[in-house]
Image (cartoon, rainbow, N blue to C red; front, side):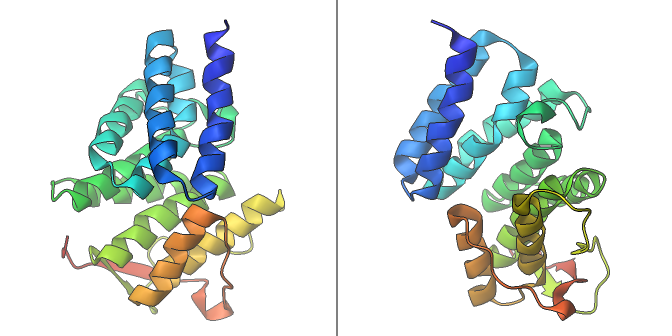
Length: 219
């Protein structure tokens, strides 16, 4: 059959498993999808379709898989932030950088600070969906586990809620990213992480539009 069509189609099922809270099945399917993409040998496909795999592996705690494939995506993108952008994410490279950073601090490996800074900086020049998703994962997970510390008066990498008009998902994603960036306690970030995995978008107040982060180095 058509391997390329199969690989693209697997993203739909992997996304359904992610949002259905079935991480074991989702992560297994993601690994099968990435192996298929590797056999196809098209760098653009691999770079563009990796995001759902990262999210499924995170939900199942498979950080070695995140490390392996985020590095693969970074290498294949070769510095091009828009490579693979035809599949709904404006900068797959920024997404991969953020997940490599998350995996690195979770596993206690060096370089995670540089990854998160690079991901957020790159995402600022991308589309609203990419920006919001990177902020949600880089800041949300980082604050949740104690690697980053939020503070309400900072002005580092603000998320602008007044994003250009676009699909409702983009606007919801910006709100989600701002909420994650603004959460300064475990409960708030826990709600943010649940939103990332389950499609919920918490409310964002005007005071939460501009927040920054500090690095505590706890992870």
